[in-house]
Amino acid sequence: MSELYDGPDPLPAGMNCLEVCGGQGDSERHLRRPGLDVWVRSRSNRVTESGGGDLHLISSCASGRITRILVADVCGFGPLFNELAARLRGVMKRNVNAIGQARPVRQMGAQLAATSRDGGFASTLMSTYFASTRSLTVCNAGHPPPLLFRRDLAEWSYLKMGRHDSAAVEGSFGVVAPSDYQQFTTMLAPGDLMLAFSNSLAESRDATGRTLGLAGVLQRIRTFDAAEPAALAERLFSAVRQEHAGNLDGEDATVVVCQATETPVGWRNNLLAPLRLLRPVSDRTGF
Image (cartoon, rainbow, N blue to C red; front, side, top):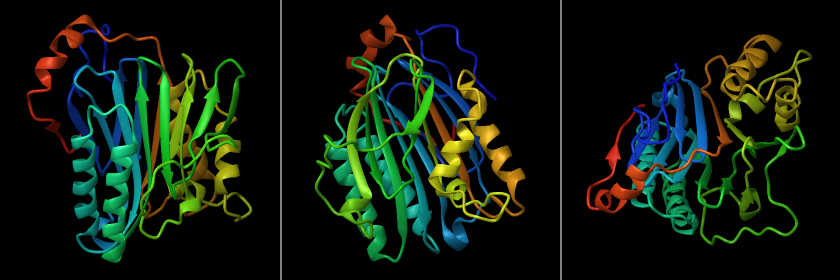
């Protein structure tokens, strides 16, 4: 169920400035941040005790102009999921006011490496949107590349490193090879979309029994109306489930859709931001 929103100041209930929200489990939420609308749709099969699952975390800085999103697909037995979730939540909290991603990515890499040594594995996608410059920085550590919709071109494509970009962050990502992660920055114009999705969607099968893969997910997204971003996740879930028996059964599935907007930072949040820096980051396991 989406939240009602009556303007850019104050920020809507459900997520406040200097807060980290999210976790694992069923979620359907619309969060309106300065410069960015975020829709989260997550379907959980509660498999963390036997083999991991999806994790999604969203943070907002003291003024609301920095929105950071982390999506992870965790494979690990016993308490590994909860341990890694707590570690990654700590990374988000410590870096809630950081515009750049270099430090949070290094810390994320350290946590993934520790999980790998304990016998687990996680693919992760961390993105940071800075509303003041409309810049989106993405670090992909073994996760499916997100999809990008350019409104002026009316076209979907993969959002991944180009020839002139570089994976500038040093560090280990556990069992993820350096060639399997990318970090880069792109600009979003109002109306542009980013769509991130979990591995289970790409690993589903088409009507012939073949694995959809990244190309299959992109092909299906292109059949949906990008002018209705709030409906994209559920339409993708429905299309994949109906295409082949067993798709998404026993698997977590998560889709996060972000749309750049012209919503400004409200005067109240600008005024209160210095005072908020003196208080601890709020931490909630759900929205």
